[in-house]
Image 1 (cartoon, rainbow, N blue to C red):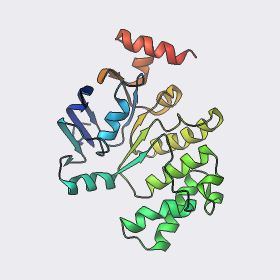
Image 2 (cartoon, rainbow, N blue to C red):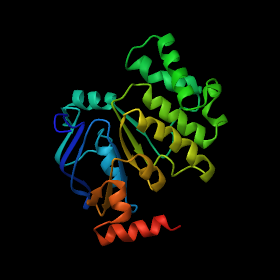
Image 3 (cartoon, rainbow, N blue to C red):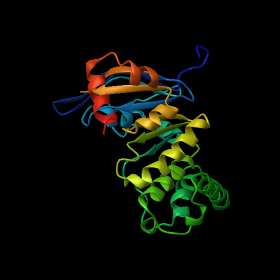
Length: 248
């Protein structure tokens, strides 16, 4: 591991919303190909943290370096980082007036300047990968939530990102759809994609996370491999939170 340069480095990251100190000195290093699960109570700063990595939220103090590029006010750096970083949200944010295929080909054609044929070929390959090639010509409104979220994952992957960020990707889904989305994410993790996932899905964490980070009140309370956190958490706050989410 020591020869690899980290894919993401965060050092003493702070974020305020007005007087509210949302991130209080968060530091984390993520190696290439690592799958990181971030969990914690709502309002703990986990979504804010993941959104600072591609500058959807601006941090006020500390350093964030993504694949060797420092996240500063330099718009070019921000654009470079965004091109390398795919993001999947709670809400699917698909364009309702575009077909599934058009939703996926839009960014590669505009940003990467791919010809339509190449973008469509890639899109179909990705739709096969997420298990819904037959939905290509439908509109998002004709799909289930689970299918829409799988389209959103395919859309993010179409830009060939080096890093995928997931912000509670299954929390808006009906229970019967959660598994189909997590299965796609598990497959993706196995390909060696660097992933940061904010989630309460502990089965997913157990299956693929290299490390887990427990956030509370804007700080990392505890981190380690899933085995360690599930079996022998050190901190009382971690124990309490895990006992609440693992037992219902």
